[in-house]
Image (cartoon, rainbow, N blue to C red; front, side):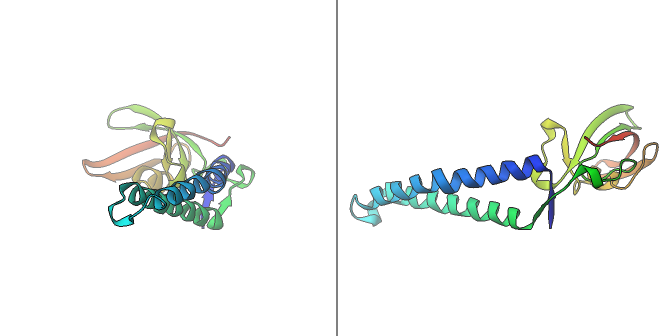
Length: 155
């Protein structure tokens, strides 16, 4: 089972609808048109259309599988005093005294540029379950990071 925010669930559902209702019909039309152009063994357009069809079907199945097993997580039931999924965590790297702020999300929602890290990443996993004021140790290739949790919030 995969837990998702309501926004991400809706985003995946919208992408799936777009693929099924708009992209796939166009792909099948392109494939039929390329097929009608003659010998398939020498038809680069046909091979390309088949490749695109395969990629589209694969993406549709992947999104369907995510939605089949996904559960939308309500922030009302989440603990406010401990780091959990959908928590916004501000912490300090004690070796560099650098402050960082990230939201802990499912792997499907991870986006470092948007300040979202996966709960399965080394930092995300180390922060899970901790309270403000506690220190988490994270094993990284360069050694061990010590992170002090400054604040936790859930929107």
